Length: 185
Image 1 (cartoon, one colour):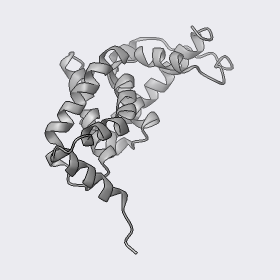
Image 2 (tube, helix red, strand yellow; image 1 turned 180 degrees about the vertical axis):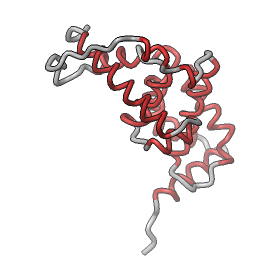
Image 3 (tube, one colour; image 1 turned 90 degrees about the vertical axis):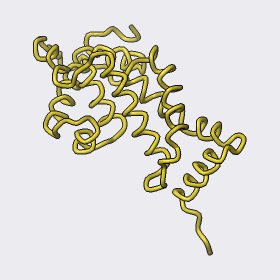
Image 4 (spheres, one colour; image 1 turned 45 degrees about the vertical axis):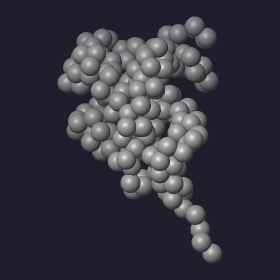
């Protein structure tokens, strides 16, 4: 019995897109846009994420010939989207060497026992927006998307230790910001 592997389906969809089969790219978009939009929102903010999502899929369309099926199509698109978000952040003047400077200068006070057990998604998005770009990026890639520090380091061009440091600072800052917010603020 021939078993259809998920990678085979991804490669087939990519080939249909490359060949211009009607509806193929729309299928690709519908399947992957929600996750990539979430990534973009968390990395660059909701306002910029909508335009960036369009840029991500335009880039995917142009680079689809490079997809060889060595990873899932979702993973390939995720890496492409992450790189697009990083390029966007860099173009805004965000430099990874300076990303944590503002956190190092700010006193952090976390009052234990004041964290709500259920944090509203909007509160988390607002809190994420307060993080310097590097901390936010590492937090999203590690805690939300599940990448390891080594993968993050390779993707961002930073050391594992820098990734760990930025994640720690992001978590401390998020705890502080979330603890200070009234519920639903």
